[in-house]
Length: 91
Image (tube, rainbow, N blue to C red):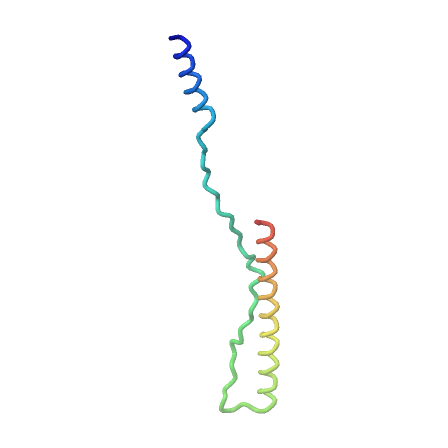
C-alpha cells in the first residue's frame, strides 16, 4: 500500500515539475521622436503682386522657390535617414 501511495505521489510531483507555468510578459513599445531641427521647409510669406510682376521679379521668385524646395527636400531626406537609423537601433 505504501508503494502504491509513494508511486502516486511521485507521479503527481513529476507531472507538476515537468509542466511549469510560463509567465507571459507584454512587450514594451519602443518609440522615438524626430528632432525638431530636422523639420526645415521654408515658406515664402511675401508674395509679390501678380498684376505688377516684372520678368526680373518672376526670375527671383522662381529662384527663391527652387532654393526653398531644395532645402525642404534635403530636410525630408535627413528625416528619412534618421528614421532608418532609429529602426536599426530599435531592431
